[in-house]
Amino acid sequence: MNAQEKKSQAKTRRNATLRWGQESLGQEEQHRLRRAVLFETAARAFNETGYYNTTLEELAKRLNVTKPALYYYVKDKDDILFECNRMALQHMQAALEEAENGTESGMQKLGDFLTRYTELMTNDFGACLIRTGLQPLRPESRAKLRVLANRLDKALRGIVAQGVEDGSIRVCDPKMVSYAIFGGFNGIATWFQPGGEMQPADVTAHFLDLFVHGLQPSKRRPR
Image 1: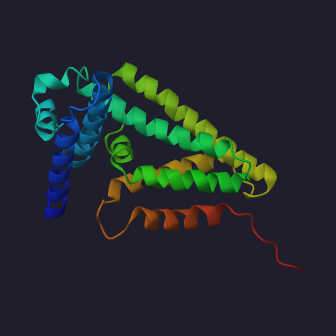
Image 2: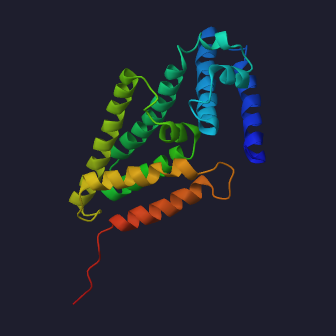
Image 3: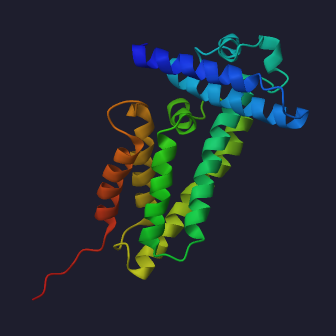
């Protein structure tokens, strides 16, 4: 672990401790907040040290609580990873629904979604979803999350199909475009380093330039 990662981890631990220890809230709100802090801390830990190498003891240490205290908020480590990945998929779903409900062209909707999607791939939850994936989860947990993933794929294909229909996206196979987009943008989570030379906005600009220009209708030269 380099100096930047150690500094980031120490900051996360301090912030988690402060927020976990908030006593001025009501019991229900305190429970909700502590679960949120737990998942944020877990997602970052899974990204830094790997899912299998991150124990509940390590999470408890980062949160400055005892291991038994964690069981008041989650059932086990599978439950933690499930929630981290579920939240990432729900953020993607919200971004797609926002784009779908707009009145813009298919291309504009696609650009809006990809901007939000890039932001997700540069945060801890998006990175956790891609780096750790669904495989470590129990079969029933994987099945639930795959339903969400399939909805995302279907919705994205629908936006591309609309763009082809309204002429803002060149004629193409929406299924192949979906594969290319998720394959390309998911890769961001494997190499992006928070606090590095490239900021999330830079990644967004580069990827939008590549994908949006590639899907624009070709302009015919006048004869």
